[in-house]
Length: 138
Image (tube, rainbow, N blue to C red; front, side, top):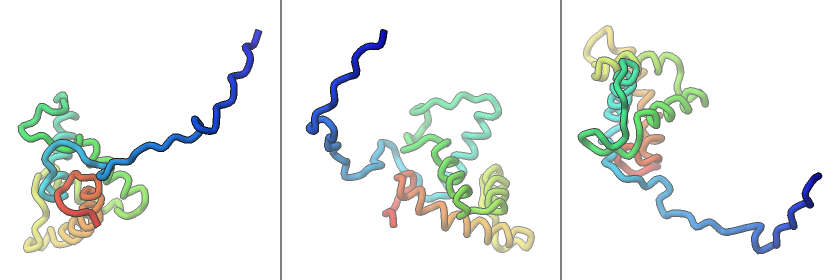
């Protein structure tokens, strides 16, 4: 047999005010100097994990304010809202695995450098806003 319906909540319990923190993304750890450094770190950690390494939070030499997956998630979100294109991602992955940015002085890397610069102009504010990269969010 069915039990009787639960009594209705009083108006005082329907809405409760939840206090907000002054900084919604304040976390422990040292933020990265720039978005490129965060990207190189995330790619290196992703490749290590794919090779069989176990990534454990808090066991690195420097405590970071995020996990490698958080940086990749920001890039994925920007791609899904079409702020980044497939060409940006190809360049970012290629040079991320090389652990160096494309050089504008090299003729064969000039297009890659312009794509790299465009991509990080979009990524840097998003990472700053989350507290992953140093600086003031705009």
